[in-house]
Amino acid sequence: ASECFRYSHVVLASSTYNAGIFTPMEDLLHDLKAHAWQNRTVAIIENGTWAAQSGKQMRTLLEEMKNITILGEDISLKSAMKENQVEDMKFLADLIAVNLNNE
Image 1: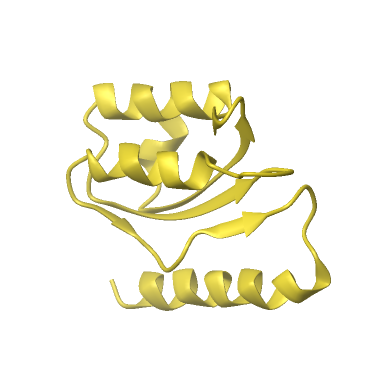
Image 2: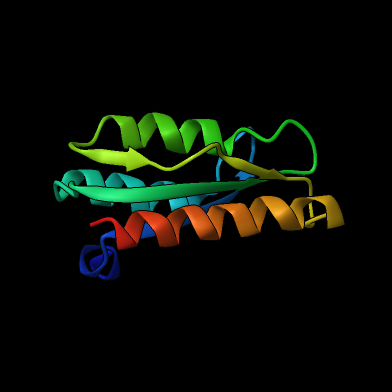
């Protein structure tokens, strides 16, 4: 968790596990909230073979934190990144870069 306090922009990626956030990521988010993590910009990537839910649930936890900006739309992968999602990842990387340069 301490590394998250070093950066203004963080990409959070989690698989869906038992229709929720994979436990280590869920623990990280609760830890960040408990330590008043704030004033950050975040991008979300979720992964799930079927019924991916981790992105939506990560967003809900992040929205409970103070001054967290969530960039763009969540990227949802189904087990592995498909060729047609490469552009989505590039777009997200560009969005983060532009946002960093505007600070």
